[in-house]
Amino acid sequence: MKRVLIVTYYWPPSGGPGVQRWLKFVKYLRQFNIEPIVVTVDEKKASYPVFDNSLESEIPEGIKVYRTNSFEPLKLFSSVFKKEKVPYAGIPDRDKMSFIGKTSLYIRANYFIPDARKGWNKYAFKKCCEIIESEKIDAVITSSPPHSTQLIGLQLKEKYNLKWLVDLRDPWTEIYYYDKFHHTERAKKIDLKYETDVLNKSDFITVTSEQTASRFAKKLVGDPKKISVITNGFDEEDFSNIHLLPQEKFTITFLGTINIQFGIEHFVEAILQVKKNHPNIPLRLKFVGNMDLATRSLLESKISDCIELIEYVPHKESIQHICSAQLLLLVIPKGKNEGTVPGKTFEYMAAKRNILCLAPKDSSAGKIIESSATGKSFLHEDVSGIAAYISEMMLRWEQGDDCSVNNNNFKQYSRQNQTALLAQLLNS
Image (cartoon, rainbow, N blue to C red):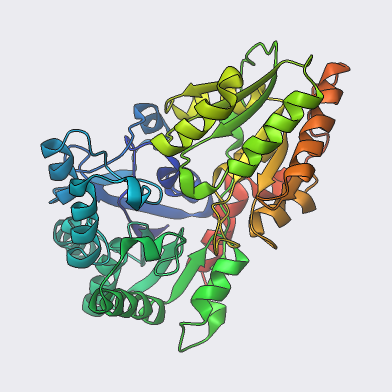
């Protein structure tokens, strides 16, 4: 077996989407004659926004997982200022942040480059060196965000010159909320230098969409063919033995983290229009996961009578919620996010429920959904189109249709298939 060292900050018992990609790769790599060895952060030292202990059961027996110390300013900050939560997806509305929040954001952007989890690097690098020198390692993989993890790979490449695969789950300096950090010009220059060094000194790069690949390719000096698209996916085992929840109301479910930058105000307008046109069809909007105060205020001020807010739940339970819905809401944040394809997209597809996608024009997520006939994609501002699609589904449900998707086009995105693509790269 080839032996591959995987360096990833997010790992069980961390919850959320960031942990799923490499947990599932590790789960299936042995099927392709590759033995993974994982280096991650000690969960007691990490600044994880959410925990999901249930995911630990998915780590295959015998997999070596090394957990290291870390210096986490975010964790320290949260312990001192109890009201300020560890950031996860995007950043809060700056105008509504406290003075402490604004100050911490400035420090985070300009003194912890590329990010505030950089304090893990020296500990992880030391452990990686010990493993490389004691075991026969054929390749190193670094996954981000946090993008500071890629600097560990950069150091290892310079010291050992091993095959290095860089996995970039999100854009780096072109992430949709990057400008909201208000970096100084010096900080931007340093961050961009890190990004281009990682891109150009790596041997392989994997990303989750074609548009993201195109963005990174513009920063490459060499052959853009070293960038491969390996999307996220769904694990068939997650969908076994699912007990559906009873639905007395037509239920639209959103799973995951959402904040005001996602731009759902027009979706709310569409809901108001639907309620007016179909007053006798009971409607429920279920949001399962993390939500900022601004989005909560918007929903409660406009459609409080039909919303249900559920905080983060274990992964298996989240699958139960999406399989029990009649319609699934997927929102790609406004801005230059054409290449964003959230990991839950494929779990939505595997749930065999129609997907209502709100996304920028020509988005990767929208193309995947419509080409697989698992839903429809609309611009955020298309109130009439969104309302018409919801109405169509509601009328089907009222007539006894369970609103399920009657095809298996989603199966190409199984975690086993995506792991096969990864194995091809590692064996090339």
